Amino acid sequence: MMKSITGKRSGIFWLYGLLAIMGVTFTLMYLLTPYFGDDWGYMGVHRTSTGLDGPYPLWQFWLYDLKHWLHANGRMANFLASFFLGAFPQWMSDVVLGGAAVAGAALIVRLGGLWRTESYVSMSILVVAAYAMLFPWWDMMFTIDFAFNYPFTLAVVLGTAYLFARLKTADYGIMKSVMVIVAGVVAGCMHESATLPLLCGAAWWIWRGKRWRSLTALQRRMLVAFAAGTMLATLSPGIIFRAAGGESWRVPDDPGWLLIVKSAPVTLIIISACCLSMTLSRAMRRKFSELFSSPACIWGIAAVMALAPVAAGGIVGRSGWFSQAYSLIFLCYWVRLTDIRVPKAVAAAAATAAWLVTASQSIATVITGIGFNRHMEAIDRAYMESSDGIVFAEDIDYLTRQWWTLQRIDHRVQDMYYERKAFADFHHKSELPVILPPEAAQIDFATLEEIKFPSGMMIVSADMVENHGDTATVIPFMRDGRPLYLIIPRRQLAWGERGYQTSPEDQ
Image (cartoon, rainbow, N blue to C red):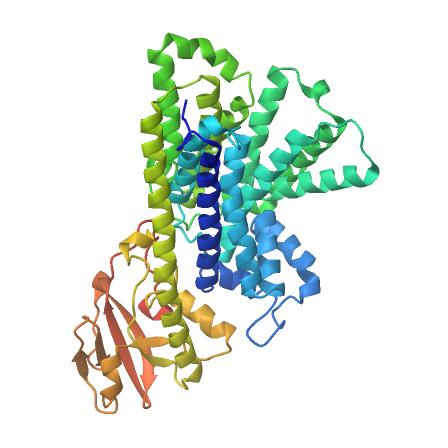
């Protein structure tokens, strides 16, 4: 078996310690990350910088959600994101999302049957480390909207599955039934890529073992409510429109098979290891029937079926979130039921290395994030005080630096036109932010024709601007009454980044 690090009762505290470090550092990362990406769109539904003066008053959240269901998707995750962004201060959302992030890891271990099991502490730590290090946190998972759609959704769905397993009492009242039904509907609506595969796995397990009648009344109610919520989200007109090619303008990041390789490598590794062991080991083949008669088949089927949205969605990264989580739960069952044995020293060494790497990376990223947050706050303050949107500061690209952050710091950079525009619109500013090198503060813009900076940036007049094609981003701005242009060499795209956001002037 995967023995504990110490072989004593204190070994379990290594798992608790890692989860505690993740809870603190992940929450801090949410607190340090400014609004980014889809956050602007969902926040702008109900408010701007001057208060609840968005196009939809907060009490009309239901009307916005209905229109979102009709035209975009029926995900409860997006409804919650828009409500939290509109109704609560950012820190409140960040604390909730930090808790959800670590809850997802804890629930994977618990549902896999490893929680508080001394013999599997090393296995538990490795599973938590895989969640913390190998999942696509780099794909804007520390922004509020994406966090609601993936880490938060996973925590809600797995939490509901855990509650379902504990509803074994035959006694129930009306209030308890209502709460169970509401929980099932809400969880089912969270995200169709998470709930539809899990529903299919549960349906197969119940049908194959003829288990429906053995479920308690509360379990049956929750399961029906979960199925209803799943259908409500999956069959929303917005999702059907997208599935039918309504977003034909969206170019897939990669071919379907490559999307699966990049977005769900954990699933592929676990499936390959399972198939290989079944092929080479007669003992494993004898365990096959027992394995797939257990709840392991729910998670195994869900992990495989969740690969379909990965291939069809066209997006690399976050699309593999749920498949990988389900495959880790399946792995926990597989290791326990097949009694896989690993030398204690090997298991302890692997778990210790995973613990140290995960904790160190989380802490180092937060330390880097503190400097980043201060830098961005200084730029934002200077922009708010500027009459023409010009800020003189180092324009540091944290998307790819420092390497140990593993691209977990998300922020607007100069070539993200729509990020800059959303920021300006939210603050009711007519001029978009333009960050010029600090040396430019000494320039006489009234007579400037062309100047190049050590960073490779250039500022040129209207007479000197030329077509730079794909080699640079051209940002127009006004200074001293003159139209000028900031020319920035194209930076190296971060892993999974989906191209440049060109401005209307570049098109």
